[in-house]
Length: 200
Image (cartoon, helix red, strand yellow):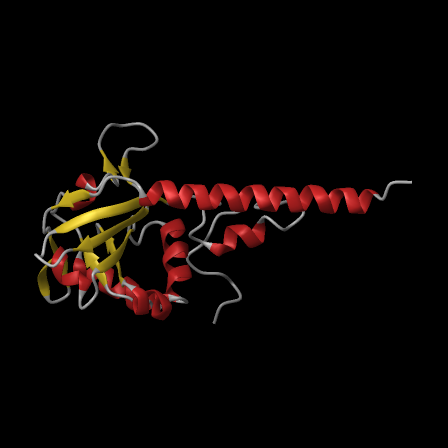
């Protein structure tokens, strides 16, 4: 008599192997994307204007999160998620968050969330639109969109974007969704909130 549990285990293992292969293939394809030359955009910090090149600090690579701002609970959850691993990320590359909020509003919101990474404003800049994370085309994708751009600064100071991706429920950038997927009903229409009743 066949063991249904053993058959299920084999199917599960095959699915994991297939997923692992697909993820490695996706990572390889992303690394082969053409690098895009990028201008040294001027953004805003709490202390005034700052150029994109300055966000690298002493690193040659910069991971920049495109955040929709303090009005988006989804973007806030993604940023809260990054906060817990910020020190690991910043050891490997520069890591910052950019949103359309004003520098003052942005700084106040970041302090309230306890974020431990730098935040910058793209207010009055074409940076977010030029990077493909803001659209005025209308429809569902109109406005600001969340995601990430990865930049490299060369020895001559020039900047190229070497990778980009969009954020959304179930993606690889926020672990909460993967834990929810283990529940019997999955996400079950759940939406993130800014605060929860059981928080201090």
